[in-house]
Amino acid sequence: MKGSSSMRKQYPTHIFLEEKKEIWALCESSISAMAISARMKKSFPDYELCLCNRETFLRLSGKE
Image 1 (cartoon, rainbow, N blue to C red):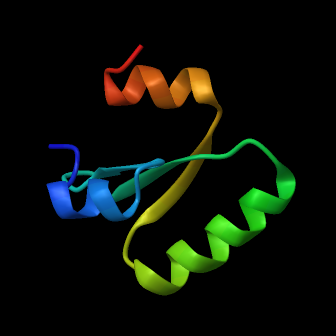
Image 2 (image 1 turned 120 degrees about the vertical axis):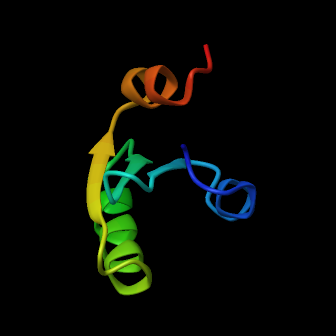
């Protein structure tokens, strides 16, 4: 499962892997990484945050 549709709408550049308790976030700069990390750790403390580039994000989401 890749997260609920409401999560996908609210976080379109994030993939929620609920069964693994992982959040994969598209990250294209170091400034983005800091902001994403702070926001997600506060909002989803039980999940592991994984930052990825566009290629990995597209592969994980099944979109090309």
